[in-house]
Length: 394
Image (cartoon, rainbow, N blue to C red; front, side, top):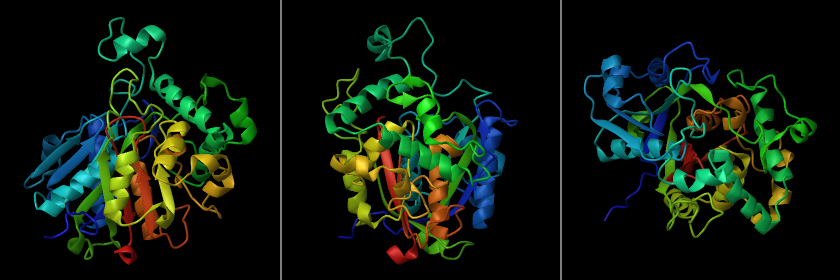
């Protein structure tokens, strides 16, 4: 019986993105932004956009596959897929779903993408302002838990308290992203460097999160990756970036409502990380770069722990700025600025940066990078992560 795996079977052959804007400032509609990123990914790969035959997205993306296919003049739409869940929990899953469609023969050339224009639609992540609430909100709103920051702060505070992790660890995560963004022309926070003093002096939004620096941006733009069979990728414009491992889902009762999950202080990656590493036949020690989704810096902390990159017993020693930088760090992280300082494109921009690192074309390039992990949005459910690598890793 042949092994059931995506490892080395599909590759990312093209990446595309738009200009990234502060929320509400895009001059273009959300659908046009999606088209721009898709066309850019096709151009990057040297593929005619009309040859795309599938789309995969997540986070309630409004730019649906059939409409995209019509606008692009696609000859035949064979796959159109949306991952459940809000925000960036599905970023790696969308890429993996595209890969699964390609490997199974359901499609031949699939775009995974995300598009946002918050001037055209409601601002993403804003707390429910309605007087009438239902579902989980009916149990949380009376106690003041209305925004994602408020809800996730409780989980992270529990974890940091249980393990004695100091706030400086979160500061280092934020500072690494801002540091890398300063050399990235497309980073929204370029030109706004972050120092320890500036971070410490900023006001709280809710402990342990400082306003802005511990919380992701809200942005307009789009990003896309083009996924094809591995053998086809070898004949295209760039050296292929192979999908080595991917997983999505959550552990037992991770989605239990109103903060009743038995494993409360969790990013929900424990089984996902295990399944991802198992498919990749690798571990955290094999990764040269980490792209860790920051909805909040505390979520990065939990993600790194649950994927095995950080031991909570030594987190205070591991999560220091020098260790997270491209220039000499043992765990270079969020090398284009991440959600905090490049753009909050719900993590799709992190997949693009992973590809650049493996091509050797990143602005903040890690020398001889061969394996990159992309950890999706933490503390939502379902979550997802992936590992990509160069041909040397097959």
